[in-house]
Image (cartoon, rainbow, N blue to C red; front, side, top):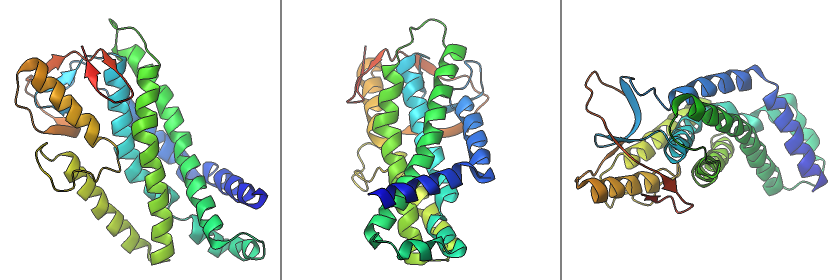
Length: 262
């Protein structure tokens, strides 16, 4: 256990002190600020048909958590996808090989160090999302649980998923970095296609490593039930439009089941 903690700590400190980490953090913070557009903006990030939510704690918390899950999964993979490679290049791996650390424990330490690096970024983004709430929302009370729960239920599992994928990719593909990036990008697009699928589609229904499918489905159910619509597709991403066709629906409360209630 002592050896594992040492490996995790050393790897974590090495990564968080790198320029790549600082650049990734800066980009993520900027993007997090744009995840909740101003009321008069010509773009949306999360939309259910022609509906978006009022800027209360539940809506801003869930939108920033979902967008962070998707965006940081993509760029986070490129940040953490070199932990094993660095040990080989610096010959640290040879030193670790002389200890009693098994292969499984070594790889698990790499997964955890990857996860803690991404977790550090997520924590800072969470504070940014709270700041965005006070900048964008004026008529709704601040509820801290509506921010914490979406990040715990949606964002953290996706960060652990990409941490595992990064290590698995290095183990099986070795130094073939280009192939790793191509395969991961293909996987990312498959998952995003699944998020945009209609509710009735059975294919890949349960394949949701980003953790956003269940949220968008319940948003669709909420809109259909309360506004007598037949919305079946949720839109995620930066969608620009000059048309002011977005209606606002009220999301007051969200609980750990990620259902929305009036």
